[in-house]
Length: 276
Image (cartoon, rainbow, N blue to C red):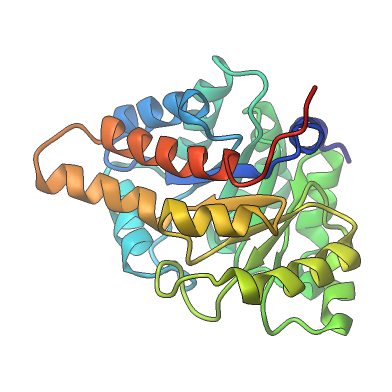
């Protein structure tokens, strides 16, 4: 397997002495065209890595903001195939930014593992996070992704003990996503004092960069997490901006990208940068 874009991005940021900012947005939210506008604007706004959610009707790990975003995406007609088309459109204009798909197993099974892995690689997708696919059941999907050089990025949680981390680490590449709080997305805030020792333990188990997500809502909290993790993920706070734009009858992209800039600036300024 290869994680060329992901590895290159983390290596460059490590040389700078800073964490990555990872922006999560939902495909098709609030429409296909506006979602593409948001996607294309994310790198310039400060996103080092992009997670693109594919809409699903039963997103069990998500709190209300991302649940609602998924429903908006479904109403906009963004199936998994539509999400891959959106990814391809983004990749046609951006050769460097790592793009990760994030979602649930059912649409991938319906698409077919081999067909999905082929289509994802063809669309320029670098990695996949599947929230509800435990390692014990991931073999066929993992094999298909490996054959097409797409990274399988797994989740670790506060309840993952050392024995479980060894199981989760098998076949994981690119980076590991540490879920910083017990519960669904957007429900609680991450606390750096709790996250720091967990990040060290997860990093040691995986030998990979650790991205911390769930519960990061403000620039202040993003900066705190950026001091102890290799990457900071924000999602609910961004899709909230889409909902606010819809409520105000305003375009979504300017609001989302402004929030990305604020969070990214906080992450970039969290540590003293190395001189180059």
